[in-house]
Amino acid sequence: MRTVFQRLLIVLMLLASLAVSENTLLGQANDWLQPFPPFRIAGNLYYVGSRGLASYLVTTSEGHILINSNLEESVPMLRASIEKVGFKYNDLKIVLISHAHFDHNAGSALIKKQTGAKYMVMAEDVSAVESGGTTDFNYGNDKGTYYPRTTVDRALRDKDEVKLGDAVLVAHLTAGHTKGCTTWTMKVRDGGTTYDAVIVCSPNVNPGYKLVNNAAYPGIADDYARMFRTLTSLPCDLFLGAHGSYFELEAKYGRMQKGDASPFVDPAGYKKLIAAKTAEFQAALKTQRGR
Image 1 (spheres, rainbow, N blue to C red):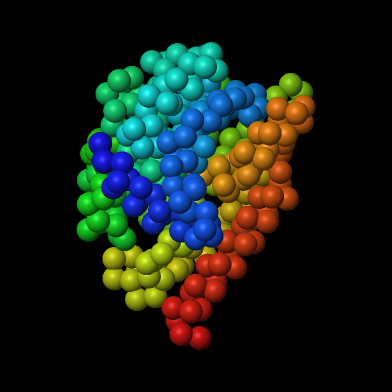
Image 2: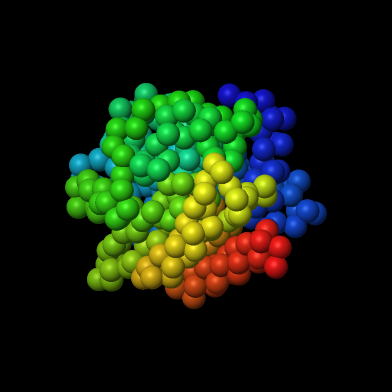
């Protein structure tokens, strides 16, 4: 496990990609490991992540699915959160991720070892996952972003379905942030209503990303543009994502505690995020093209 100092530096670097102001970086630098109350979002979909790193539990009669294993240091917190909402950690059968950056997948090796869960990853991210981050197109030479290597049990393709019990999740390739960045969708039945849930991967262009003449990722700009088209096309009721900041986790959870039955039903917020991030990408691309 990394030292606290190393982790702080990396957190500061990556938080910058979330358009957080410089004055608030230090205050948020530790939110990746700050506990957050686990809760049921709707139906069989639960939030079990930290304040800053989102993880989701999809429960079924045949075991459960975890989306995002987060940091290696996050695993005890994830286990506790799963148990707090009434389920057994050892009943995890499948682990999925949004993308192959350590803040979303470094815990996968340990969870696989502890539970025997199958690890399923978008094919374009398999190399990065199995190399522990050393083949990442942008961070491959940055040892501070490496994580434990682990074997992928199933390589996924765009629009593949992951099924367990009566749960069906669809993997949408929304590349750019990583080559295999994956946005997950599923139907969530809650009472007499069925919702379209979207768990956005990452629409961010990180500091240092080359959108033009990128030898390590020649198609990066085209992939980002395709990602935004894909996200725009997805029907969305329940708006979720790989970081709580994408979908105003804390504010909406606060509303839920005050009696709002469905604060995460936010199609307008989903469209707003896509529009804002599309504009940020287009501005960055224009700048890098020099016009």
